[in-house]
Amino acid sequence: MQNSDRQEVIEDLLSKVDEGTPEVAQEIEQAHSLDDLALLLESLPVTDRVSFWEQLSPAIQLPVLAEMRADASEAIIRAVDEVRLHDLFAELDADTLLELQDVLTEPLLEEALGRMDTEQKQRYASAQQYADSEVGHWCDHQPLVVPAKTKVNVVLRLLRRVMPKYCDHVFVVDSRGVWVGAVPIHKLFGADGVLKISELVREQFPSLNAREDIYVSADKVASSEEVALPVLDDGGMLIGRLDLGTAYEMQAERAEAQIMATAGLDEDEDLFSPVMRSARNRALWLGINLMTAFLASWFIGLFEATLQQVVALAVLMPVVASMGGIAGSQTLTLIVRGLALGQISKSNLRPLLNKELQVGLLNGVLWAIVIGLIAGYWFNSWGLGMVIGAAIVANIISAALAGIFLPVILDKLKIDPALSGSVILTTVTDIVGFVAFLGLGTLFLL
Image (tube, rainbow, N blue to C red; front, side, top):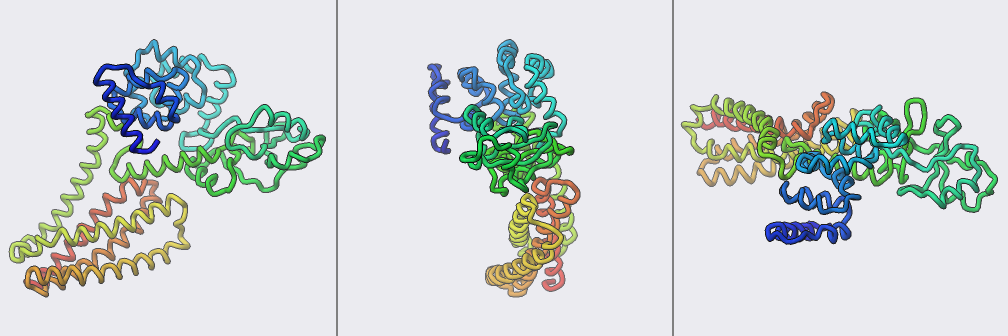
């Protein structure tokens, strides 16, 4: 659903809610995918969200909840009558339960598990052996799998009955379930029907370890030129697969998380989450920003006498800080993306540093000349123009250094650079910019 279409649907829904007329949930449900319905629900105030969700077909109510962000789905679960929820969760499958387990109450979780058949319980238990950051927790446990001794004509009959999405290979295992390899489906057509499937196995088919990070695994699938990769445990047992659709979803989820993290927010933050919860989530980073602001102010205070005598310095200080902050954020964004894609290593860090320093020097000199001429003409002081120009060069170069080293160091410390890098970078560029500008002003203008 395009943004403009979604806005029209939301406005239409809200008008119908306000007027008290019947909703058109079924019509919207038929016209849009689960993803679109989830985004639509997240765009509505909580009361209207619950009302619209209750009018969806019971068959898709839980799948839509599973597609929504945790905070948004939790708001619906808290608002819906508990008896209704118990009825809905009577036929919950393991995959949907895995998506919703963090927002369910313990009684609902236990009841859902109790009503599952043996196969679904085993599926859920298998996923719980792995952390939710590991691919073994999220992989599809129903790939197209056949034993190595299976004849080709038997596999072809199976294909007529079963064909999962994102499937162009048959996965082959031995009698114990240990991974043997994969056979391209197109090779089965025209092959001798009495051949064993193992005789057609493709060599060196890539695989994923179940303990591997889900986002790393998603990147591997996306770059593998395969539509799905097998997921193996430490003993080589096939436990499932990660397909291209899921891999792209994971990459999009990571990108959204990084965008939200730059503002100190969780990717599950609901657009209409309760005021107290939103305030609590944001208060921490406001407090951290306050401390860094006081630190920058303390450095400015060291030059109080200079500011009293050369007022122009106070007027121009934001220019120095702003130029350094923008230059640093450009480098920081580039490095964070490189780290996320696995492109940054010890071997290419030095050339990358040299390149960014050259870019910083070139831009620093260019904009130092421009800003120096403007400041000199504005305040009729070419000495002031030279001082701010030198400060601009120093700050942009230091911003390039900080933009490279901060995310690398934070990543080594297992701290998300997308979350805290921008806050620290701003502090560094503010302090370097102010000290350079006011220090040079003290030396040359007084």
